[in-house]
Length: 91
Image (cartoon, rainbow, N blue to C red):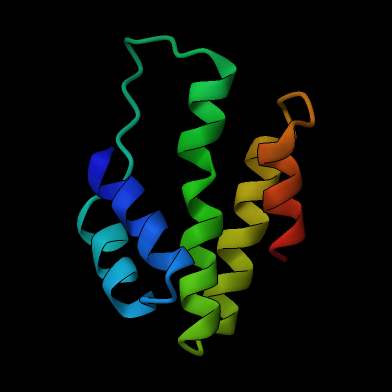
């Protein structure tokens, strides 16, 4: 999770290639045996929006669109929080 947060920070700093490398080498792991609260799940799910931004800025519009749509779809089941609004505004 720490490297995922680093990838998000790199995305905000516009270091898209480095961030995408971290996203690809450190995917979010979902443990079915642990029940997380909705905010923890939403924070982890939101990584898809940051990864979509990387793909968009590096010219992979199709991949970016797919990731963004998947993130919004996964967040729709939660109350519409700032996390959901962020994901929706990245499309």
